[in-house]
Amino acid sequence: MQIRVEQTQNPKAKPADETKLGFGRIFTDHMFIMDYTLGQGWHDPRIVPYAPLSLEPSAMCLHYGQSVFEGMKAYRSDDDRILLFRPDKNMARLNVSNDRLCIPAIDEEFAVEAIKKLVSVDRDWVPTAPGTSLYIRPFIIGVDPVVGVHPAHHLMFMVICSPVGAYYPEGLNPVKIYVEDGYVRAVKGGMGFAKTAGNYAASLKAQDEAEKQNYTQVLWLDGVERKYIEEVGTMNVFFQIGDEVVTPALQGSILSGVTRMSAIEILKSWGMNVTERRLSIEEVAEASKQGKLKEAFGTGTAAVISPIGHLKWGDMIMQFNGGEIGPLSQRLYDTMTGIQWGKLPDTFDWTVEVKE
Ligand code: COI
Image (cartoon, rainbow, N blue to C red; front, side):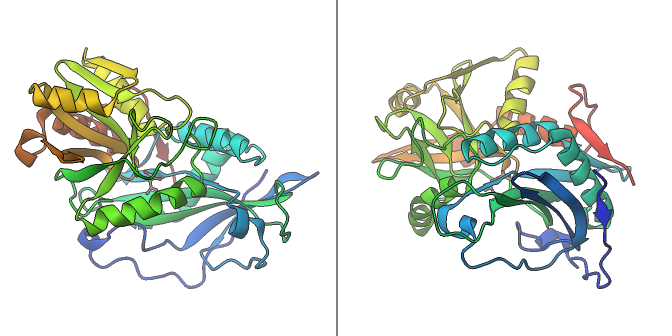
């Protein structure tokens, strides 16, 4: 399929101060769109000026949440190359989400090419200030104008891009998290492993209550026993207990993060003992009491490597490194971002250059 490109006639002003980008508020000049129609498949891929959509008020995605998305970034290296980080993994995960939401699969290689082309068209929007990048948001919505609960026959695959700074206002400073033991995010057999709008809708109430109490996000426990650690609002989570680095195993209710997967591979390459297993909040609390809990950090495309400085569970407060970033989180952050921004050799072959 050929991707048609319609250049904007009204380019927007680029952000004047790249140190104040925030996250996901500014959008570039163009977007990618491709339609799906039952019987015809995915068709008419195009890059067009970024603009509001025209949807029927009855469009299915607005009512029943048949909607999946991805989060990726493009990074500008010091020698002015534009790099994507493991885009094939994001597109593979998009198809996993698609399958769960009865959305027809996309051609993963074609989707990566489409994203490269869009980023190339908007390459001047990839920011240069340290720690900034171009956040890429691919998403698919069901758009049939039908208020009946069925998988859509008409869908749109779109990609929009936003120059961003750090996701959390804390930047690389440790975040404060509390363990959520009232609300649950997902259960096995549900959609927790899929990157779909409904999972984020389910998180809003807890997130809002956490922010009101001056916490950055919540740590979710499993939806059945409220015992095992799952993930934090927008990131997967790791704990260093003694010499073991533990992250919850993917058992159907946790998002399979690309940064999570990469962190595990980097830690293993350093010879560290990394395990993916069930981890109860009691075990973490016990390790904390015994002085064995060394560090905790989250991983995510938006969050990168985000150290946790303070974890509250009921009345118990666990502090890490006196509220400072720990050596392991720092080393992992430096390595991950070093590869992403092309400052370190890409020994894993993870980056993909976007050519003009
Ligand atoms: C990402 O890390 O890319 C995400 O999708 C998290 C988010 C909802 C901002």
